[in-house]
Image (cartoon, rainbow, N blue to C red):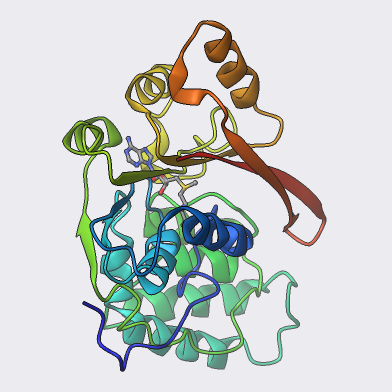
Amino acid sequence: MVSSSVTKIFKQSPLPFTGQKRYFIKSFCEVLNDNIQGLGDEWTIVDVFGGSGLLSHHAKRLKPHARVIYNDFDNYAQRLKHIDDINRLRQQLAEVLKGIPRKNKIDPKTHALIIETIKNFDGFIDVDCVWAWLLFSGNQAESLNQIYTQPVLYNRLRKSDYPDAKDYLTGVEVVSKSFDELLPEYVNNEKTLLVLDPPYLFSEQISYRKSKDFGLVSFIKLMELIRPPFIMFSNYRSEILDYFDYQIKRNDERFLNYKYTSISAPLNNVGFYRDNMIYKF
Ligand SMILES: C[S@@+](CC[C@H](N)C(=O)[O-])C[C@H]1O[C@@H](n2cnc3c(N)ncnc32)[C@H](O)[C@@H]1O
């Protein structure tokens, strides 16, 4: 059970994470409230493609009596344990970058100092944070070496420390398995909600270090395992709704009377993208 002292609610993931569902939180919580009574007694909620754990965090806050399982395929929980070190390195880099305008290219001398500061740092180095501070890219870096070998770096350093996130996953069970190993453990339990936010086919496979293998075959496997109750996210332009409709025509009752909502969200300050949240209880 979540202790009463745990009150902080995160509107976004404590550390950067591409594809986090921050703009869907309101709709996600509404759907949970509409379909899961009270505090969630007897329910299990499995966040199968957990990413930053943001949906698990909100599920547990909203339905504290439910068992919430966060599938942390990317070791995000590990990153969270090192926020103090991450902030310490951020502060050191802020000193080096003093006077360099934000979003501008970093001159060669400062560039060398930045790399030296990172190499000399005596604590945990979070590759994804450093990548976000120094480069314009939504994709995850493969390694620190990839950062060391960049010809050009930019000053995108975050202005303030990351928040304390010690309680972010309080009460949430953390596992780390591929979806096709995890789902069979839960699909036969009626009161288990599947939260499915897979890498979007063809667009996000390159965004996550570990998504290279999430292709068409994985998607087909996922569609074999899916059953209500589920909440699934997909790209607005993907053909998932067409696929669900097609399956309904083929008398696949798993998708009959599904509902969905679309949300627009800002994309790198240059435009908008739209995603769907499809659900059936
Ligand atoms: C769109 S993101 C999920 C974002 C998450 N809902 C959030 O709010 O932060 C998709 C996640 O699925 C993970 N993933 C990729 N292949 C997977 C697999 N085979 N099994 C489980 N998760 C996988 C990716 O690494 C990524 O973290």
